[in-house]
Image 1 (cartoon, each protein chain N blue to C red):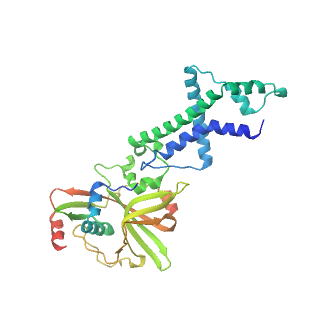
Image 2: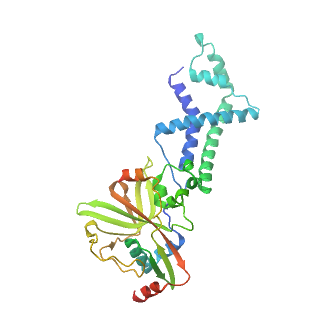
Length: 63
Length: 275
């Protein structure tokens, strides 16, 4: 599998309730928290706000 | 002399350069690594250039080891001109027949050396993150960098303490009944033979009709706090959803991080209490 899925994310995805919480944060593209087994995980979705587009032209061409 | 023989000889001589390029661009088997396949004409040009360098190095090496390659015979075979009444042909044929095992050993060892060199080059670039540091070493595979989130690791995008735990993909796909927005976490992706994106594999996939967009005057949800189910989406049963690149109309990627908090914030506690 070439996709980047960290161990923490993998753990969250294995728990149906935590996965649903994460999904809602991702759907709305906003930061939030996921509660699982008494632990709290912070979800940050705004990581790429300062990213330059290295392949902007090519990506635009692909539509 | 058969017309095809010089062409075959040229191919055998250029092959080390092509092998070097291929193994460097392809990377080790089983590695999640960017591959950058170019057009055949481009590969051939690179192959010729690299083959010249490799032959120069290998000739110097075998001479140091005590062997004396008959370069003149090789050039005559390439040119295909053996003088009046093919007087030099006997000498060339005799040289090839006499050193047949040496020639085969030279070529086979050069092919193996080129493959090892290309593989090591790829490993070195990836292990030392040279492709993140400079564009010179960046593989010509923008999809790999985008879909793995490595684009955030590039020096020009680097920001202190920022890590990517996952990539959230949103893709619009047209069906006969209308357009749908498919979303999920990128688990894998594949390329076709030409190196173009072929499929994207999503985990925890869900979808909604594109026409179910939220109206502009609708109240936005709170910035940070408890997550409430969005009734517009429904989960797609199954472990993985495969989206074919040719059917995707537009694609959006969000990079996100998930970190364990030592102390639960009040809003998170409130969310846990209400859910």
